[in-house]
Image 1: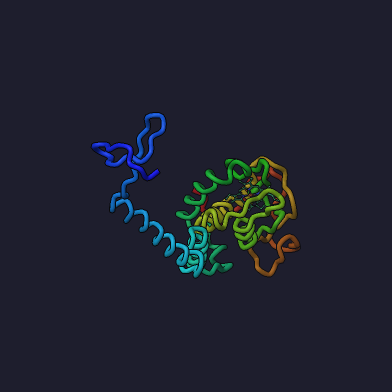
Image 2: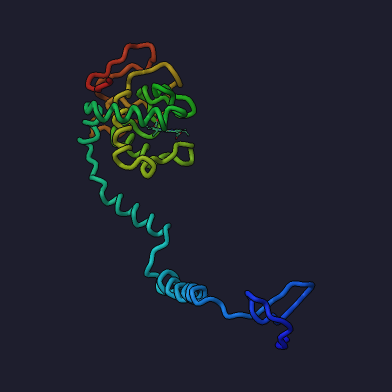
Length: 218
Ligand code: HEC
């Protein structure tokens, strides 16, 4: 092997020859070796930093941390604030856009119902008070095909779309027949949702003119 058979002007001493292929055994260029050993050193640091001591965070961990940070920014939602939502016309308009993009496929363009229930009647499966509706939208009813929107839309997005849903509540758009319990006095906090016995009586018929009073329905 080591016996020099011939010399090549570029490669120098040729050590092997196979079928006319000449092979020398020269030292690797310094820059190449430096890069090569550099990667080995780097992989050591990398391993200690991300694996052994878990100092660096993986993208999934960074994302989880970011989500937690974001959720801390969430403001405390009070009943008063939720009840006031439909009179905030800016919110209702933003909510309308959110609704068209995310909800209309299942609940109809006007909220009249499709796969999901009619949101414009006074019958509710999961409670008809502002707080119930906010919760249903935020947490969803996963087993029944209603996605949770809290993380997808963020708290502000959920508040916007809640404002819109509250603004179309009791507008009785012809569509899917009422499902669930009739909730008459929807935002009277004393009335447990779904079991109201007093308060203003809303017609459950879809042909009656709508009697909503305060919603800002631009
Ligand atoms: C994939 C279809 C789908 C999408 C998209 C969807 N929903 Fe629903 N939603 C449903 C279904 C189905 C139900 C009924 C759940 C049940 O039967 O318990 C429901 C229930 C609801 C309820 C409760 C109704 C009640 O009677 O208590 C509200 C409020 C609601 N959705 C709002 C929204 C909003 C707002 C969006 C958009 C951000 C949205 N939904 C997007 C399918 C959907």
